[in-house]
Length: 431
Image (cartoon, rainbow, N blue to C red):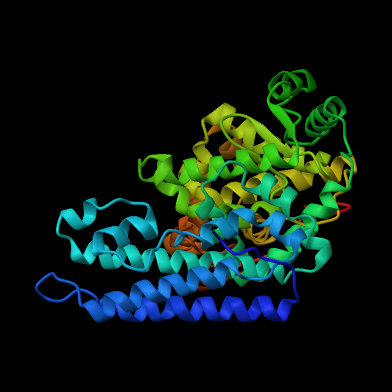
């Protein structure tokens, strides 16, 4: 029977964590020597591996815990107990079945390397889960109490491994506590705009903007937006956004979405910076703190997609897609006195503003973004920043926005453009 864990001080928990990690380190160090060249097991090393797996299990089970934290992190602790059925005297095949639940088939295939890799992978996954427990327990009590809701809204229904990856990734990025804090703040705030008035305000603002008024009437915009704007609660918004990110990753290489579950923690880490997104001809807005300016920005994406089948994004890339949507959003918001206190996509807007100051005209941008006339836009970018400048803007393979901006500015100057321009559309506040 498993020993009963009782609450105690954080120092004892840290000591148990360190002891268990040490036991698993011994396992990982010994494993490469566990299988002899002839395919048999070295009895001494094999025994050492089994014994230290048992010791690690004992340390995990006896680790003191905070009852409040334990309720919030029970899935993480369950993962840390993958070594749950290791016994004192076992054959190699039994050991494999015990530590991973994977059965004896890999040993029957004679794959001694598979056995070593399997046990090593199990030991590392236990270490990762224990790290996640420790990172969570290190959070301030006020944030720990929010963990059940944060887990439920940010990783609803995903594989248990993703809980561990997400906590560890966000902790190492230094954003875990801040993300949970923002979740708490959103949870305590009420929606700012009812759905109907939000869509109407968006349509009226777009139709009143010079350059857009010639393309879109209020009636047309209401027809296009009604039924295509969803204001979602925290859980629904996060799940749909992560699903979309995984689907896009899979589509880039024509692979099943299931193959991309390992990227879930990366998508979750980006959630708190996302107030809305457009996918599949539908606008999705986060209910907590939804604003008209976010709806305007996402409406730019939707209208471009509906009218041109995303020709701008396909030919000019995601960096310039966000540049155009946000630049036009700022024009709309400035003209209708729509306030949003935080600027968004600043590097992207700076690029487009500089291009327009140097000769790319607003009608050319509008024709490209809403009518699919992309070649004049590409030609203008090449004329102003050279073919390399266009290539920099098209390259979105892991490059951060500010790095793209810096690289493009270098090329922009090298191409001889002398009017770089710094002014952005004037608005009460930017996105």
